[in-house]
Image 1 (spheres, rainbow, N blue to C red):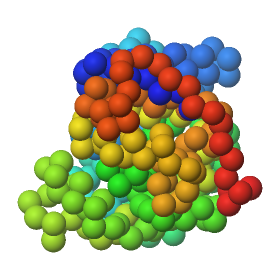
Image 2: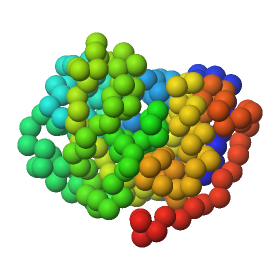
Image 3: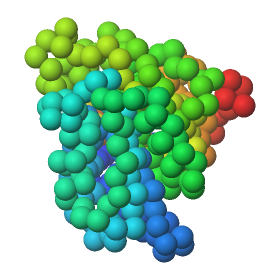
Image 4: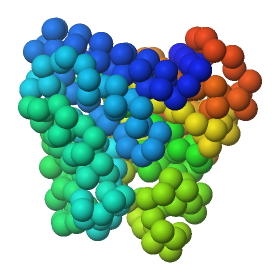
Length: 259
């Protein structure tokens, strides 16, 4: 795992977007098309703002996304489908978008997305890290056994409080208790992973990701088992890990539960 520490969240977004764009360009040049998985939430604002400005042939890019609340209409301010349509799809004409629509038959929707994902590899996964160390909505302890592409998960209180703190809901009671989430095993199938994790609220998660052994109880540590991961942090999210601006390399780890 490579850790890149930038000064500000804007610097982080620019650097993460540059790597994502380069990986997509490379895939298009080599294969004629590219596939990307996108995260959502406040932590991804600066990265997406920078990414949509790149001069890519977006008609050759296919997008998937990580998760959505069960029963959430895309017109709701907290909908991740609505988020991506507004902040990404509307700004990169021609991109093919595959959404997690959790308002209908969830089993059928998961089966359809799983079939698409199995057709060919995902070139880059843009995978955020939550305040509780989750990746997608795989809250601790994450399910490492599930081999499906997506599953319905129960959201823990800290995860729900993060959504409240980011301003998506008026009260904790309004935050859904379930979501459809991409699984850990599916995330780790991405050929490359870029993780954008700015802001002080993520400082504990970054410290735990770097310093903890690989464990389902700190789901982000599972990224350390992947050979091509870059985690971008800013001065605020790096403070608990005591990392100065610069680039750091962590050794590749193993996890018996994923074999």
